[in-house]
Amino acid sequence: MNSGYNNKKYKVYTQKNFRSIPQIDVIDREYLDNISAVAEVFPFRVNTHVINELIDWGKVPYDPIFQLTFPHPDMLLPEDLTRIKRFQSATEHPLALKEEVRRIQKTFNPHPAAQVEKNVSVENGLEVKGVQHKYNETVLFFPTQGQTCHAYCTYCFRWVQFVGMEDLKFASSSPRYLTDYLSRHPEVNDVLFTGGDPLFMRTRALERYVEPLLTQDDNNVTSIRMGTKSVAYWPHRFLGDKDAEGLLRLFERIVQSGIHLSIMAHITHPQELENPLVQAAVRRILGTGAQMRCQAPLVRHINDDPQVWRELWKKEVQLGMIPYYMFIARNTGPGAYFEVPLAHAYEIFTRAYANVSGLCRTVRGPSMSAAPGKVVIDGTPEINGEKVFALKFIQARDTRWVNRPFYARFDDTAMWLDDLKPAFGREHFFIQEG
Ligand SMILES: *Cc1c(COP(=O)(O)O)cnc(C)c1O
Ligand code: SF4
Image 1 (cartoon, rainbow, N blue to C red):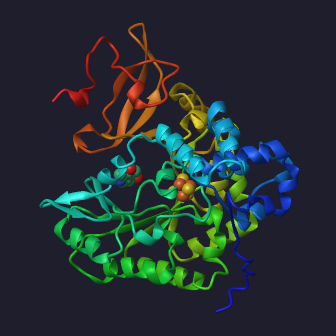
Image 2 (cartoon, protein in one colour):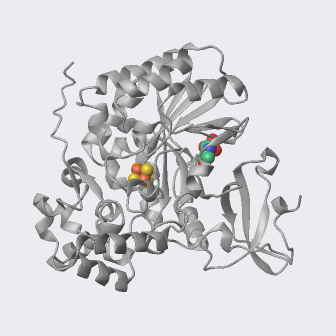
């Protein structure tokens, strides 16, 4: 079927061939060498849509979408950067480079296996592959074919998986794991397909996972979510790709079956939404009866500015999408390059939130996805002469924790929950008190 959209040739650039990107000449030689060195350590993948449609090459290297997708010299320690560049030179043995890269990767991620265990539900001593069930109503499902993305975000916490340090043992290639799990867990009414990017998968593959949820009546699923960056990184997925029409028809079938479908779009900067192809993709998705909710982390160098978030939420609402989460970026990988202190994150959120219409205030944050749950920073008040962080769980392993305020000592350098100490001279936060 001809959708009327001209599907430009999909071409991907990585560490190996990025110097042949036509626009690359605006970047000086030394910066290019640094990109090449950093991209040995962290995953780098960018496609023609991001290059031709999203990046403003006149603003490179400060352009936010360039920052979002291209590695940057400061992501490595200066001494590591220098060493990689030396090992890259032709006189060195290629194995030496490989070993050096692994050594540096391990300094960023000493326990590559930890994430795998967390992503697997254990039931009757058996691993339920691809299913993560942390919050009562919702399961996350990781289909094997959706564990990569059309382009890579430099702040991605899945980078370990993308550079092959972590295998895909946790992901599932069988829809049966999901359907069997759901029939044993009537409390689950919400399934979230995640990755990577589940819409990286071909429509045929996605249908194998989704159709049983619609047709089998031994589950209580009332909503399906798909977390994706494809709307911004590859809108042709919903426009001119061979199976774009098929994907939209699948969305329609979900909605017509009486199940709510929400496309959870990862949108980091309003510049992504100014693109006409991205806007056309949004219109087509909404045309199926699906809703769209938007989420992104707050990251230095890309969107650490209240004006940017204000524009982002306004643009989302204008296009018919619902602002959902502002996340604190996880402290993994090149965290130091992207980190924003919690106190500053709260200021950015509040200054943006204060200056938008109520229609944008469906957004929640800034939120940390930590082991016990999602913790939102709700204020920095002074109580009985002590300045504190007011915190609360908006989602928790234990449902009794949700929406109960608790307090930590104010600390303007704290970056994550681990850095916080209980306020008012207490020894523990309430969740640690049995
Ligand atoms: C965020 C998240 C969910 C979904 O939480 P909602 O509050 O329903 O958006 C589910 N599982 C995990 C592990 C999560 O991190
Ligand atoms: S879209 Fe998500 S999973 Fe993919 S690279 Fe970006 S942050 Fe990582």
